[in-house]
Length: 478
Image 1 (cartoon, one colour):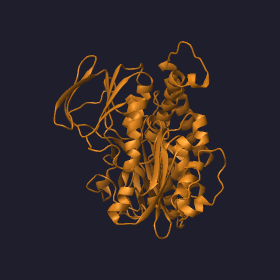
Image 2 (image 1 turned 45 degrees about the vertical axis):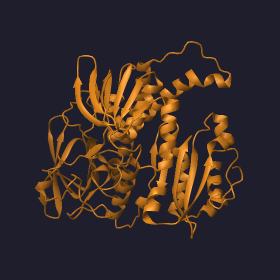
Image 3 (image 1 turned 60 degrees about the vertical axis):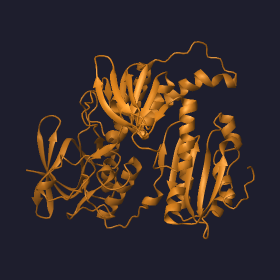
Image 4 (image 1 turned 180 degrees about the vertical axis):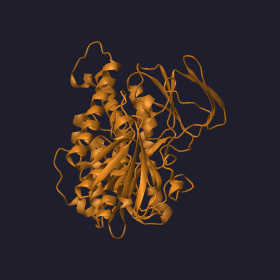
């Protein structure tokens, strides 16, 4: 006999677990099916983000940045460190502790909010009147049949495979392997100059690796504002020391006993051969929909393997919803979480709203990169007349005190209405500063609104204030 629930969420990542908690808060009898396990085979909620993605990568980025600063910048403060060394095992242990605290926190929240958790793989089995019969193949080998009035699919994404290349997480690594390299490789290759490639490349470069990044796209960070991308590349190559090659064509990749040989063609058409101790493949991600048994209930997928949904995350089936990486839009954890909350509230008859134009993007390199809204290139292509205000962190007292005077804030506003259309930051704590811009744009603020708000002094937020002032050519410190 199947267990009956009002709402069943398939997937316990940032979208799924948040959707389950919110649904339960709204009074629905809710369950979540998630297959993620820790190294001991126990349930580990949080999906890719908390286990082998967003959170552990930030832990390693912080550790490597501390090491790099001790080696290269502490002397500027009059601090002598003597002989410096890195204990990679200890660094990885700290990362794992952070993962455990976060995933354990979700388990606690499930218990607190009375969400039933199934540790296993969930899939459709059949329609059951106005509900759906699901099957959960549990980690212990048993199978549970579950009936759900509403189903929220939040199965996330997995690593996009490079044809002809086997990921063994020993020599050829995906994001999970890149987060668990046991010692600093002398030569590290990274295929892909996206978020994962740049962040993982930065971690191991700071710790002493010679890092070469190979990117197929002709431009660097094509999704970002062109000026920001140029500035970021300059700092990543000149100061961090990453070697970044764009417009390359990857040829044969051959793993030996101790190293990996990569044949590639550079942008000029010249044949190149590089040998690496480790190779990270980070060429994007694909939606996890193959195991859902979608055909059993007639769930419609797109040509890209995503679940076909409308603006409210509704699929072609009544009471079947999908969120996060398995649907259209950016593959971002915070986008998935907000969609999860919105779907739970829609099931309850509420009318939440998400503006996809106001979703922030962040890359946690040094300096950090963050943006929200339109780029200059997008505005030009659309024929939108705009004005621009910009301010350098080198003129910001707080940034200089931090030793982080690199980069700038750029604000783009409509030339006629002054409404903020986009904000782009490369510099210290860009991930935190972008929040003010998101709030401003969500409330249709103008650059004048930000210019008239009192910002604390000294603070990095003053750079955003000055950029807003500069939109009307009345900057005070530039």
